[in-house]
Image (cartoon, rainbow, N blue to C red):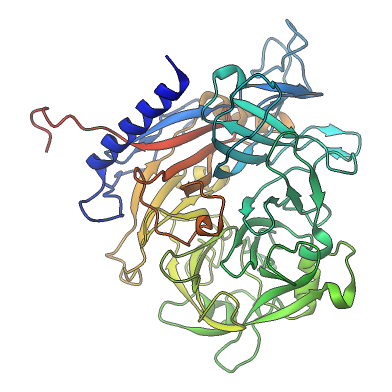
Length: 547
């Protein structure tokens, strides 16, 4: 079939599907609750289960061969550090024979969807279309100069031979790209921004066309355990850090050790000149809540921060200014501590609520991910969702309150995204230890931002009970052969219409999945590393007994 005709047919089909699963006159999905999570048992690989009316389509998987292999980078989710015994040009994806090993899985992470014209790939004769999904890779095999990270682009309109393009394996200096976690599109700088979750590694800016030029912008944005990264309408860049803290003495509770940052550029799109700020929360007496004030088990400041009904004042403190300190890369985590900013227990990702004019920022706190933590019920051990409110995105002050306190059932919240104007999706990264402790794998939940979750009768809707693929099951049982992760994790949840302009910044418009080009993606990370598009399943209105 003619490619243009096929794309047109798919677009028509998507519009038909959308009518079936979205309430009339609403941009909110009508999600049914998946009653239970999948259980964890030795050798058991259950399938994922979605809300009725949802389906998922794999747009790439770890075993998808890239169109332009570069060194050990040969596949979407594998590096060829351990070749197959039968063909050394391909990686050993599954342990075979007596060899207790396997190839490095690269863990494609946060997704960024863009609709772009005139993009190129490795084959100049191919029309790569206009719909693209970008991601960095969170793990890599050791090479000279570090671990081999890379940036890929899933060409959603292309055939299987050209489905995945490696945009870059090295930065502009020739150094291997560090392993990457978060990503977003900065419409003012016209660059992808990519984080590396390591205070020793760069924060990157990358061009989107092939081949990508990748530069280190950590002289202005800093280096930290950065994960989530997000623009606002003023051109500020919000960064959410994920660095686990040391244990509090005699417990498995962690000392809060990660910060919320805001980069204020000298002008919109300037990634070389500006100020990096960190969020500081003030306690009821007006004193900063710091790491020192949260070091004791159930420290009063920490308990207050995690108490329903408590609203605390916030302010931004400058931790670095290129006009003062210059543009050498710097450790943002240490700078935030020196400035007495407020750390949290792994606040991994954040997003603005649509319709708030970038005045409401919701972010996750993953917590301790251990059922034995002494602070689970009191001080964020089960994790949390926070709401930061400001008069505008550049305001110097605001307020913060806990929106949802985790429980053993809903815990380890990590990636976050709005599905509609008031429908917030947050997904778990509980980890293998807690999976075993509670006998439940990860789930994805939808939260109504108008609901009072201090009332325990109110619970979020589970829209995804994630399963566990056979590769992840093997890795969980073997410790990943010393290099790969275990149980699958939900990551890279991303809802966008692909608009590369300022109106496409997440939070600028309310998503309306299935309409107006809005699409929903996520990655089932670890194991086989599938990246899925979630679609609204078509309903046959002629079916009988469809209640």
